[in-house]
Each structure stands twice: as C-alpha cells, then as structure tokens.
Amino acid sequence: MRFHGHHRRPGESDYPHRRAGRGRMSLQPRLIMLLLQKPAHGYELMERLSQGDKSPGVEPGLLYRALRHLEEEGMLQSAWDTEGQGPARRLYQVTPEGVEYLHSWAVNIRLLRERLDRFLAEYEAHFKAGEKRGTEDASSQ
Image (cartoon, rainbow, N blue to C red; front, side, top):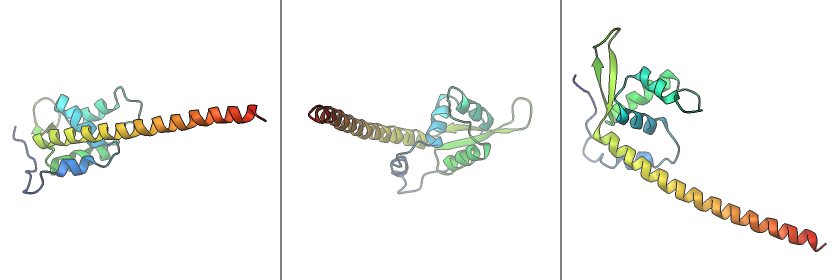
C-alpha cells in the first residue's frame, strides 16, 4: 500500500498548537485517537464513534470531510485497500504530525480543565458563603 498525505511546508511546525487552542471538543482529535488505536476505513470509524458514547452518531458527510481535512493538513494518510470482498476502500492511519496535534490537544484540555476547576471552586465557595449569609439574615429578622 502506498499512503498519500500532505507534507509540512516550512514554517508550519506550530500548526497543531494553534489548532488545538480552540478550547472546544472536536471530531478531529477523536478520529486521530481512534486511528492511533487501529487504522480504519470510514465506515468502521462511524461504528467505533458511536460505541460507548451516548451522543448521537456522526453524519457520514461530516466524518468524510473531517478525514479529508485531516489528510490535507498532513495529520492522516490514506491508501486504497483492495483486499477482501467488495469495492476498494480508503484505509486511514495517523502521521507523526497527527500525533503532535493530539499531544497539543491534550495539553490544551488539561489547561481548560484547570481553569474550569478553579471556576467551579470559586462558584461553590461564593454560593456556600451566600447560603450561610442567607440563613443568618433570615434568622436575625
């Protein structure tokens, strides 16, 4: 099998860090993680995305656009798999750039989790203090 993929141009080395900084969950890191576990075809990825997850399945068009984008950005590469029965299908696997992107995503998730934990601690402290003040205010009337 010959894999096709985008090769990084000079000056693109920081791409995963910029991309991972969006702070919202995305299909892309999930796809990369699944493909790190095992290279797969699009249909198999759709099945694996819906397993063990209570969220609705991914639309095929969205999945294939995400795969195409990841390949264009050099994070995945694919090859036609002509073995087995049925028509040829693209088999996707992760490139070193994809692994770098996933590491950056994880760093950003950790930072986001720390910020959310700080916010929740402040939130809980504020409303616990408010509940105590509310109880004291009610008893003094």
